[in-house]
Amino acid sequence: MATIGSIQPLWDSISLNRMTSQENTASSQNGLPVFADVFQNAINNVKQTDAEYSQAQYLLATGQLDNPAVATIAGTKAQLSVQLLAELRNKALDAYSEISRMSI
Image 1 (cartoon, helix red, strand yellow):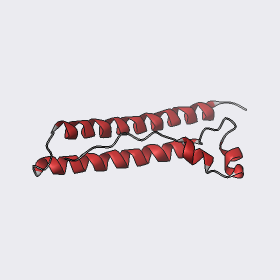
Image 2: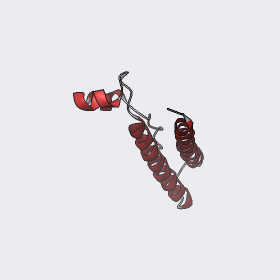
Image 3: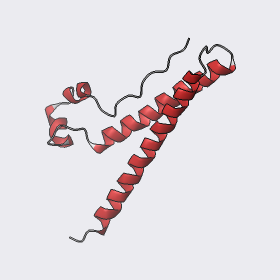
Image 4: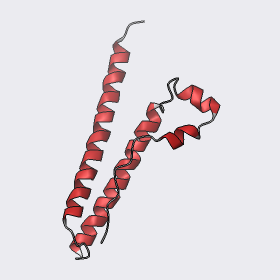
């Protein structure tokens, strides 16, 4: 029976500890990753969940999947990860437009 993995977090503490001191000071003062890292992790999450969904659909179509709910769960995870990525993009565009409207 095929299993579907969990949705990966946008950032983890392990990758933060591997950053050099120069990258750490450039990223942010509070220890969180920069926006590009968060966005790249969200893109990778979309790719991963879509691949899991495609695999679950294939297994379901070929009769190799014992539990059809696994395919439904994989589809929901893929849909949610795409929605999260779209919301991140929308918020980034909103922030950019707010910054561009500021007068100096």
